[in-house]
Length: 398
Image (tube, rainbow, N blue to C red):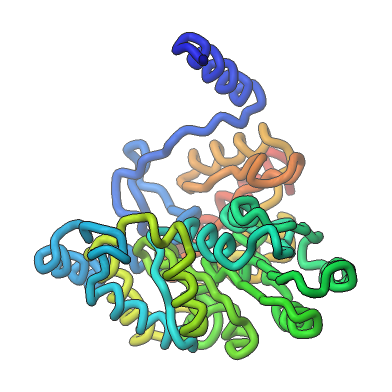
């Protein structure tokens, strides 16, 4: 039996170890809405680390939709979806998401993390093989673990190695189910998965392709419909996951695909079945955000144009931004201490950023992760570039 004192000793030892490695993390509360400029520790600073890509989290129409829903429906849904927690609000948003993604149906989850856990663990079990990119989000990794499937991790965007692994799996056990799971936009590097090549492999080796569009929905593809639409692969990707918590400024996740896929998940996906349904205000705000996006299809283009400008000029200053192609721009630093110092100095200059450290990224690959919003102005971006140049030169990174 673990006593209270033994538990306290374990917790204290572990926390001290994290502090010694500069891996201890603390919460950083904002004192205002997550907009382009925020109040942080009593100062007004430029926000360069938010996933509120379109600035819709505080859009007047989105806030009003949430308030109306709460007045009409209350604050909570009252039950899980299969008991009495399904409201007509849920079904209306699911229909709209399906139409937006070009699929037959969609299914809401309380978070993107729960969506990935639920989708992967429902589709794969110990009679299946899952092939996962090494830079996939933690929710995909944990979905693979939870499923009990035999999981093969392949080098990042390495189509040739993936094909070799698929061929070996087919030769060894042709009857096993095979699922290829990838991020569409990789959340730390900001690059894209090679989806056309992955779709070819999935068809060649009779595998299912699942694409996580968390960081693509609302910012890539025609009208912001995502990276699958960006590549024109709507008919060739049978399983799409997305979130409402980033570009759509709300909270929650979803699966999109065939009617049979959604019905299958309703009956087998544990993170859908055994959790309370999303609250009315959240559902309504996501629907309103989607409406704003569809009424103003220029929003995704604004994000990408501003990201391209910032990325181009950061690279021009001498920073390594890897292969970023999106609104996520890594500024490579190297070791943990240097990354933390850079974030601290950038804050002194008026930029709110985040130092990304292990285990999120490998040792030696620490970085400042910059994210761009549609609401950032040209003046904001130039202000950020000036701060990066000053701090980069002081730390001899450039």
